Image (tube, rainbow, N blue to C red; front, side):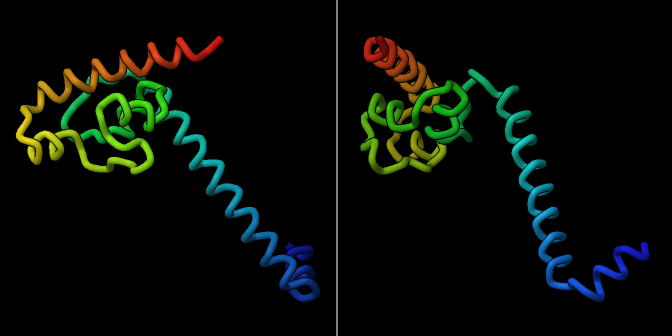
Length: 117
């Protein structure tokens, strides 16, 4: 405790900077761990209306651009609407849109396999 007190008196800015750096390191370590735990359990999940194209692509380990292209959307402009809203706005029933997404996943996977040596 005397060491901390002495450091606070002599090197206050250095101690504050070290504490902030340690807190940020801990924050990003926890965040990274949570990210890996979450996505290790969410692979190839059943597609639902609340999911976005990007979420589905990430779950099925595809680049979102590939899935968007296979669904007929501009791959340069991310489609952020959930599938349920896309179905509602286009008048397409959600089960049909989900079937199209599943077919697009297969198509995108085939295209990626053909491109890889």
